[in-house]
Length: 461
Ligand SMILES: C[S@@+](CC[C@H](N)C(=O)[O-])C[C@H]1O[C@@H](n2cnc3c(N)ncnc32)[C@H](O)[C@@H]1O
Ligand code: SF4
Image (cartoon, rainbow, N blue to C red; front, side, top):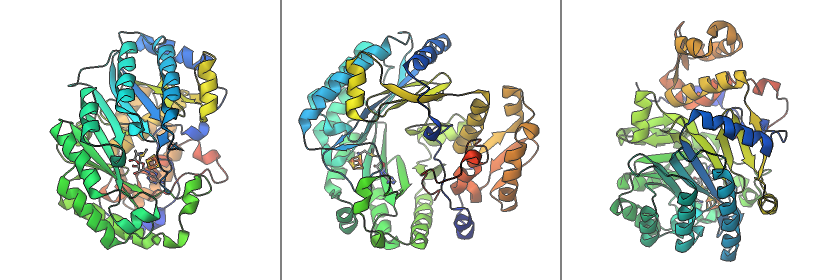
């Protein structure tokens, strides 16, 4: 499969609009409180019949300081004494969740996200992994994908060594930008030495994959300043890179109100940054996986994309397609059988449920057949930039042209613009359409048409 991407400024300008990132379909906007603990337990029982492997996501919400741009679910606090009561609830939740799944189902994927997972002490991190292993069977290091999000300000070589010892084999590092003026404006001053210490340790300890997060569109960024950051990142040659578009939604994320609108780069500067970033990364040998992600051509994600086995979930792209996902901790989302279920979003509410001996799932959705069909199409497009019509018809027993008449009509304009190629057997996203993959997926989204007002999705580019 061809993995190139081309940058057409005029097209991008024309198609730039708000849209979902499709870490789930239907998106979380469609979750309802009608989906409760009982519905979740029923889904777990159904999923045991499948014997599928498991994936577990742990949310550690605490951060020592708040980065003003942050759109993650976090609790800013310097009070480390908040960790033990949180972990106590996580352990009780793990016990309740493990009782719902057959012990024979192995955990092939495990992820700690945040917030800042390394807010926890070394002893707490070891204990959390021990308790997890007591309740679930984790796959071996050769098969399992065990990943953690690291803030290099909250980790050093000894942390990395410990993480490798307790089983992690992949990490992503939050960097965002190396420029001090940008860092100061977003309240995240992080030296290059702190970042490099963690990266060097990851290589020394045998982490299989390292990924670096950068954000473009932050205050005071210019093409030159961001290129400078990028050069320093390319020099250390991480396996993967995430180049996120800064999602500025100050009405939704309070800390973003401390960012001065006037300091943000103009839209044309952002596009210039994106363009030069793509061309520099391509020149450096990275391939565009899709939706903000780049990887070295020998990385598992790039290979899985070539082989047609790539998958997308709440943590981004993944090579483990067929897992049921268990979400542990405040705000976590799980995907079990044909459902998504989300835990309580406020710490006190999460604690209250767990203390009462209940799971903290408070909303979600049970996918109907149409949702499942559309999710399959969106996943194929977002992971592989192509969709085989005959396979879709055989898998779902549909006449593609009839079933998706609406979507095909919507796609026609994009086909005329050279974003996609539609033949009787295939829909293929062309190099010009790759950065606009969200727009193309939106044609298959049955819920967008029912929306009237703004629903708070970030801009596509
Ligand atoms: C949970 S954080 C990463 C872990 C750790 N807390 C850290 O900051 O290093 C996940 C990533 O989301 C990205 N991110 C956070 N807020 C964002 C926003 N408003 N727009 C785009 N990307 C954002 C950042 O690149 C960040 O590294
Ligand atoms: S970017 Fe990371 S460290 Fe900063 S506030 Fe968000 S979750 Fe916390």
